[in-house]
Image (cartoon, rainbow, N blue to C red; front, side):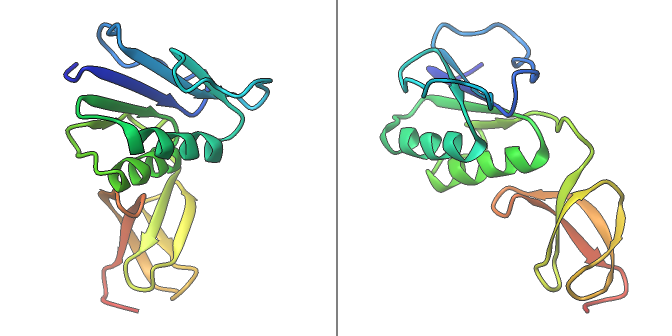
Length: 157
């Protein structure tokens, strides 16, 4: 693991830690809906009541971070897309943010023709709810949008 500080962000306590040794400067943030206390920003392990609260705290932390932080995210594709949007917005590059393999085959998919978002898509084909086009889901995941791209094989809507 490169970097001087490491932050592992996971959607739930069942997400395993990254492979390899755990560096000394390593913090773990976990969404645990029944937690009773708010996390200490400097603690090695923090628990958050919701994903939105964790993302707010991540954005705040990244405002004051220095070069050398590495962020690792594990959970659903939607969760990791949200983490990627926050880290990208703070200026972290792809070499500084690592997204684990999604825990579920369900994906967030965006129709490139009308920008309609589809949640929890598990198949490679679908009909767009916005423009009614028959779409094929591509393997490309847009970190900026936080979704897989879907395109009509017969052209635009």
